[in-house]
Image (cartoon, rainbow, N blue to C red; front, top):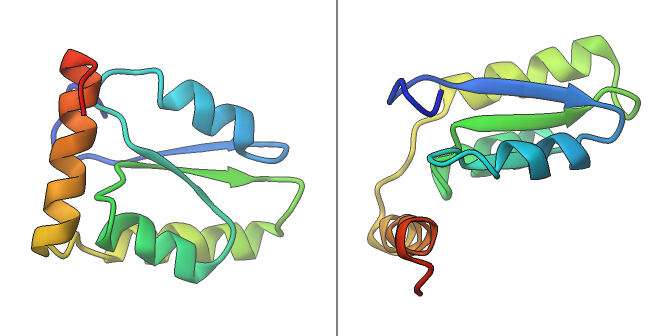
Length: 98
């Protein structure tokens, strides 16, 4: 995902927290912990997340599939405030500055 702009990834663990933390250590990854269809949608719309993390112990397989479907079908809004936030994240990731 980090080397293939426009691709997406899914990490699944017990709670999803550790997987999200680990995924966010990879340069270029914006991983979001997802626990509802709304958080899956907002991860894409507002944060342009390219990876979602799901707690496998927290949700049924069907629910996880719903989160994934919503995530994959949702586009980044490109609203100015959201784009500005992404630029701030990228600047911090690349230069350590906000």
